[in-house]
Image (cartoon, rainbow, N blue to C red):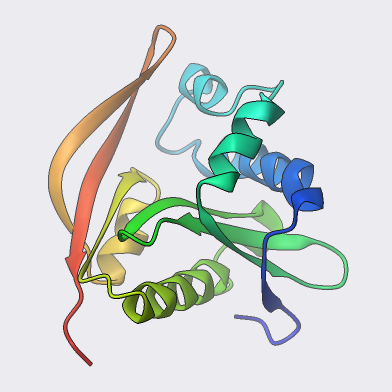
Amino acid sequence: MPPHLRLRTYHADDLTALVALFQASVNQLTAPHYDAAQRQAWAPEVADLTAWQTRFASLELLIADDAQAIAGFIGFSLDGHIDLLYCAPAYARQGVASALYAAAEHRLRAAGARELFTEASLVAQAFFARQGFSVQQAQTVTRGAVTLPRMLMRKTLEPQ
């Protein structure tokens, strides 16, 4: 992770910035794998902030930021579910996701998780494979009339 970034926990006033980062990430970084209709269904231009607030409240959230902007975030549950991992396009491929994931795995190990799992997009599949996850099955999720492919992936945490 770039040295000027820091990891911190979520604050309620981060809501709109995280949703905007999510929208930018989906719209700019997933184009090689998902068409325009799929990206719009996944990250609509007008976000349901109440739904996001509820989702964020149910997760542990870690944010990577610098003095100017949020670089990325990860959301997970202490049962080992990695629910969200997104980087701002300007910070993609700079180690932000790796640093966020490493911090989340450390927290999950400390909480006693023995297995991690995620529903990885086609874009995130290679990232999670590099972290030691393996594909369990191909899945689809439907948003309105649009179907999005994804992969259920798991990782067993070996004792350290």
